[in-house]
Length: 149
Image (cartoon, rainbow, N blue to C red; front, side):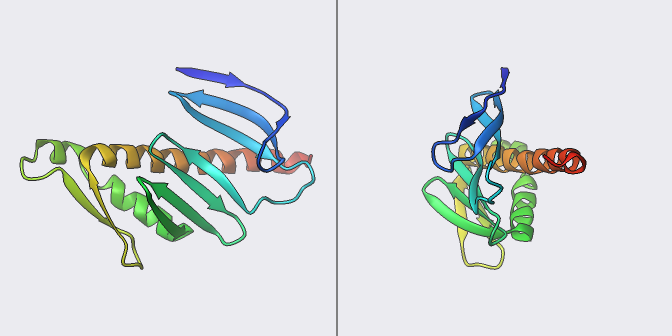
C-alpha cells in the first residue's frame, strides 16, 4: 500500500521542514529541508519496526541500531556491510537443516552480528530501505541544484 502526501510542517525534533512524505507498507519516508540553511548533523535515514539507520553528515558516518545493537559505519564500510548482508541467500538458509543462525562480521572492527533467519530478513529490509533513501536524496539534490531555492 502506497500513500503520498505533501506537508509543510516543522519536524518536532530538528525544526526542519518536511517537504514530502511517502508511506509504503507502514514505512515512512520523508524529505526534510532546514529553512535556515543549517545542516542537521544527524538525521534519521530509514526506520522499520526492528531498527533504524541514522546519517551523520558532519562525521560522514551511518549508525545502525538493530535488535538492541548499535554499530557505526563509515560510508564505504556501510556499503560493504550491505553487500555482505545481501550476499547471504535466504533460500539456502531456509532449506538448510543445520542452523538458522547467521554470523555477519562488521568490517574493520571486532563486532559480530549473530542473527536468525527472521532477523536477517528484517536487516535486509532496513539496509535496502536506507540505500533507496540515499539514492532518492541524490536524485532530488541533483534535480534541485540548478534552480537554487
